[in-house]
Length: 268
Image (cartoon, rainbow, N blue to C red):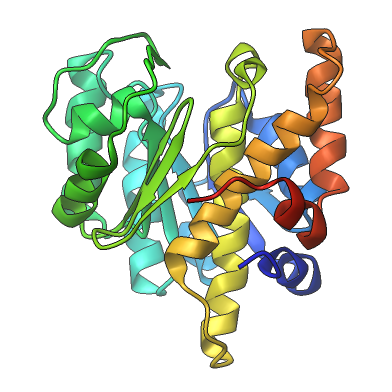
């Protein structure tokens, strides 16, 4: 599993983002830092052409823009048409009825490989009561293994719930990741950047499947989450100021390798 980071750097997958304006630059930089190539688009005209050459597609609804909602649906359907792995980040799905309805539309019309959210977002999609405000989750560290497994079965994809402990499930297995630091919640965009990392690993995973190498999709997804968690921990070893932390986060992802992931990763 840890060696997949080498494949990302070797294959340099093209990760196509339909993402929010707040974090678009961070997502581009984090994708580059890992060793993949970011591509951003808000164009209706190029959807089919650009999706067809991408390694993976990431859809993030963080800043709801009325003029782009149909574009996100079109991009997801194109990803399905061209058999490209596609990731959904339903940011703030519980915040408004508009976000809830749009997320339901995406889930009903597009087959996603991964749905990634914070614990409150995933619990909400699973039909449970949540504690959250805006796009932020109030996480008390509870074990939601069964919830994530149930949502993965319901959606028919890998589900990621990030929090004090990160949970990843494909409906059968549950992977728990205990890495991270509270500072990751104090920097805008770390969740969005995790989606970019997942898209990068999925792009490499998809290429490996085509070359008949045995790699598990859930492990590829977990690698994106683990890379963010370990990098966050390493960046906060000296309890640095929040602005310096963000800079160090990108540096640590750039310098991340399989040995560090093995040494520092706390995976169950």
